[in-house]
Image (cartoon, rainbow over all chains, first blue to last red; front, side, top):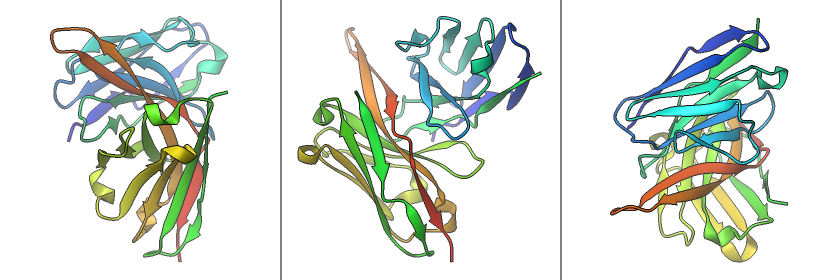
Length: 108
Length: 128
């Protein structure tokens, strides 16, 4: 099984900050990496697919990069609505997908 | 409007069974892989199972193999999850999700899958 590890598990930041969340795979997954945002009591929302492609309708302050085993999600200038939990997910293995454990982004 | 609506959740005793449904609308259901993803209370997301467009391929997370069965009825635009031998650790909100794909042309085409449409979820509680 491919394990996905996110860091940090939680993060405090202020509106306007630049924030980076890291996701590491236990083996190379090329660019088969997606990022989701989830707010309390809501379903996840797709932000980034194929490591760096921005989903339609997602603000351009979100960006993704990386390939192989190391990936990052960057929010260039935090907005109040960005405080949420973020998950990475690998789609490399056709036998089953796995998510990272999540990164909770909180207001400082 | 593209929409997924889950139903069928509830309270069930350990060892019991439950069948979840997911009704799709606003898109050609038969053209997409579909997934079930769950989230235990206060925990992260866990992919549970997925199924190919025609139902010919199905994959499961190890923890539910032999207990859960994913299926679909393209004529009814519906996805299902039959859950048997339920355990306390199966307690979660269950989401259905559509898997979209982007194909990158190459000598060997690259297929990138991602879950782009999600339902609001249905809650399953396994407790005596």
